[in-house]
Length: 435
Ligand code: UGA
Image (cartoon, rainbow, N blue to C red; front, side, top):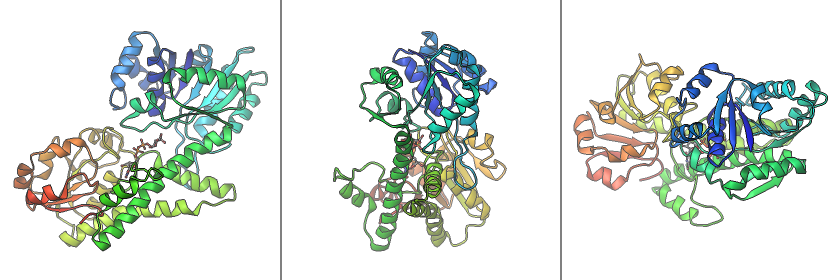
């Protein structure tokens, strides 16, 4: 099929590449000319395992191309996906200006008699589909189109496998013709397809991300009870997770959730529920628990080091999760900045995130020392804090780490290491919710 994807960010680019991989012809549109130039030159603006190969292979096979022209994309495609950002506003509600602008732009280039399915893939509040439909009609009276909601559930760091093997595909549609075309797009993925009305599909996305956030806050609250009682949150998570009704996924205690989705989507769902007159107070508690995790962690560090000012602290990990270079809303970055604000001397290492943290001005490189290896970070450190659970941290020479540190103290914010092993190696090892 001929597909167009507007917006070449995480969702748009990965979707475009995967749709091309299964045989569709895809044109990816972005209004950032530098990004289009880079992609045309074979440079991938984000780090996502497997993505670079996928893009190169499909560009070479002429199934994937990049342009800055919405007209080009819409002209050549039966189905037009919108995958532009929907950032949060100050009050937590969703800023839909990019979606509205793209809807107007699509309206401006739709030609008479040219039927198109306009698919919203961005995460949007319930009832956005109705607004997109009204907008296209307002700016193009004779337009022949249907709007569909098709939320995306990929995770950064494993976006390609998530997209190629989805648990489910949700198609929110009010038109049989549009539904049939969407089913054709997804048929090669051999995944279960759930067809719903548009409002339900939009709600599924916010409800899913909020539920996963709730699972994380739940286990983090349990971790605090474990700390107060001497129980081990990893064992508790295993024990409750073996119940199929609960499941073990997303029950990893730590510093809390971050990234560009969960914090924003929980806030948005709280705002949406208020606007609809049915406030979702449970989610306010989910947020409160999450925001308290860093305070608890730094509090425990202070209990040992007493004053943080002038202490040398090593931090491993800056990205909001492993296997990505994304540092947006990263708890690790917030941790570093809070230590710096207290006057600590922080040396940090991350396999992929340091460059973007500086480029996006999330870290001040004159205040945080960024080093090229984990071992460089621990020289003279009075504590090592693990903030992101990159696998490579498991394979370090810990005798060397210990020898280089001023004091062999480790605070593991992601429960990555085995407590017994770390203590045998001679570390004063502290985790989250574990004795
Ligand atoms: C999340 C959802 O998992 C995806 O299904 C969704 O498509 C995506 O948001 C989105 O809305 O676009 P993502 O933010 O990429 O994906 O990453 P996750 O793997 O969900 O992790 C989010 C945060 O939760 C990370 O900071 C991670 O460290 C934290 N987390 C996750 C925990 O603290 N504990 C866990 O058990 C799992």
